[in-house]
Amino acid sequence: MTQLDSIYTSEPIQVLRLLPKDTTTVELPTYYREGQFSGDTLFYQEVEGEDYGAIGTPPAYMATHDNLITLLLIGCLLFYNFAISHFWGFISRQTEAIFYSRKAEQIKGTGIELQLMWTLLATSCLMCSILYYLYVTTFVSQTYILLSEYLLLAIIFAAFVVYHALRFLSYHIVNITFFSSQQNRKFLTTSLFLSDMAGVLLLPGVFLLAYFNFSAVPMIIYAGFVLFFVKILSFYKSYDIFFKRNAYFLQNILYFCALEIVPLVMLVSGLSAIVDILKVN
Image (cartoon, rainbow, N blue to C red; front, side, top):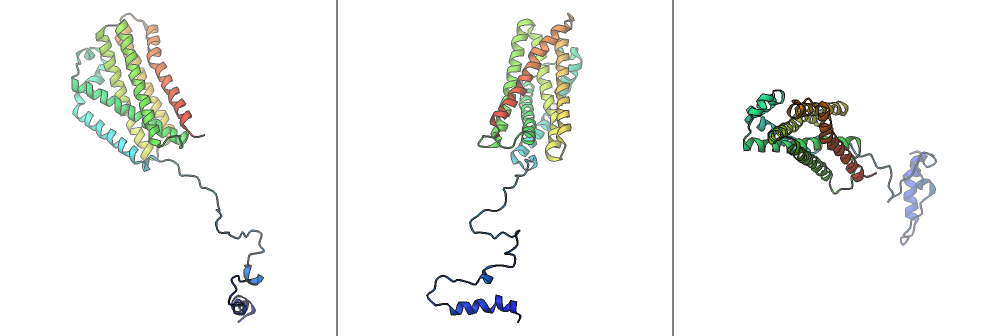
């Protein structure tokens, strides 16, 4: 046995044997209390009761791990499949009516078809709210002064519902004042259908963004293109229904900016203000 082995094995036993039986505190030799790396400046002895290390960064939000978002998207997908499969004739006639004004006068939707369009509008609001929710949780903040992050989704959804309700109400008040009831009904039906189709066009992009690691920047460009396409069609239909006979192009621009662009700017500004107030700085 070497001298080092005797230090770490036999010596402590001999010291303990020489201590009195009633001794409660054992005073060990210095070479026993110190370790091999005691003199190293990089060695820090752990003390019981203290915390070590830093709090790690929480993982980024991922929609693939969110059960509620998954259920909502699957529900939207199933409802869109049901609507397209059972009301394909009505949808195709409405699509043709956008580009052919004469066919728009021949379309008379039933009560079930009108209920379907309003339900599709609510689904489109849900799709837009999910897309904006994914955007703010990715680029703005993941922590908000709410009991649940789903309350933020509910607030965004309510904002989209209020936006469409006020938009259609303002359309109805202005159109019934300056135009005939037939023109008003035709334009409101077309505008409602265009809002429904915006949600249908956004559905593939939301699925790609949430479950297939689709980049956010192309998704923002795609959503902007869908919004631009829908607004251009709405501008064309307002001119075709209200101002085409008198060739009032300037009046159509003023009408479109007052009832389409201004509410849209108010919606974007309101959503930005809501998120800025609720997020934790």
